[in-house]
Image 1 (cartoon, rainbow over the protein chains, first blue to last red):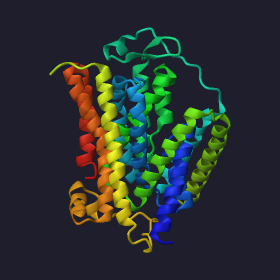
Image 2 (tube, rainbow over the protein chains, first blue to last red):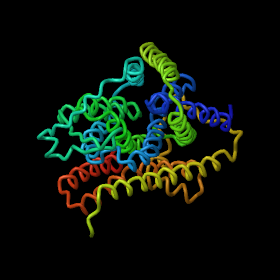
Image 3 (cartoon, helix red, strand yellow):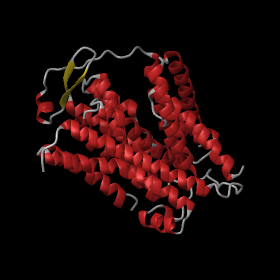
Image 4 (tube, chains in turn red, green):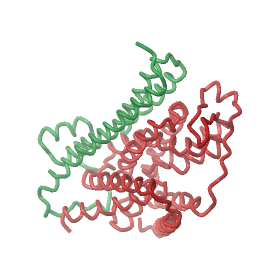
Length: 278
Length: 125
């Protein structure tokens, strides 16, 4: 295989990963890492390096629209980024301490966890509007344009949310993913924020979280231009196309189908990790 | 400085994010075209991790490579622009919160910036 064929194949796969990531709402990172490791036999450290770069591109690209619409809460995002960036430093540090078998196993478990919500009913919105004393002090409240009127919300359980965010940041730094599923869990279920606000604020935070470990990845040589280039461009294009499709059509069946692909990838990652093949 | 509304801050943040991603993508694409100028050479072996030549791992090294018109360095430069985008976004937030005289969030944003700066300049060592 020559460099043109290798780059083209990687670009095609990344475009598909970006598409899948956008349609399932999981982000391109969770698809591209197993694809690189299992299909292209790329060392997992190069895979997470390239993935992290693509994660910054897609989340920043998507954030443009969400921020403009006033859906992402900048203060809540900024406050929780203290936890995610600190966690990301820890995660990036752990990549040097853990063997690639272990990274693969943890990755597989996160894949299985991420795919799980696609098979359950959408969780009830538990959003609360009653002001919480700590949240008010930290200005963690706001409002967004709901279906009927402007709806107000106020964060609850701030320390719990902050703690989960630290964990989300650690996994992001360890696995080169955005860990959007866990960020949404922290805000939606933990802090009782409206689902729409949780998903868009999560997306807003992913870029900064990833940037915190990207510097470390770069110095360690995890970000190889020969891999990062086709992956970044492919995932970016794939996720832009995916976002368009998502606006025009409901994709419940596709979502379940894709989630099965992700479960298969997760099982394969765990199995390969345990067998020591990664 | 006149105080700004949250709406104006959001709009400025959206602009900087779009600018950063577009700039990064264009630079990476230029690097890609240079990189694929010799399409028939074999790709490096990626199946085992080996530390790269250090010039691709540091900002100074990448800039040197760009001056030599080295394709891989141009790609890395685009990636550096991409990594810088969220960092610049945090700087924008600090400026915005300063103009709103929101002392609490000036502190919060500055903490995030310190963590990011630490990672970017001290991370690998």
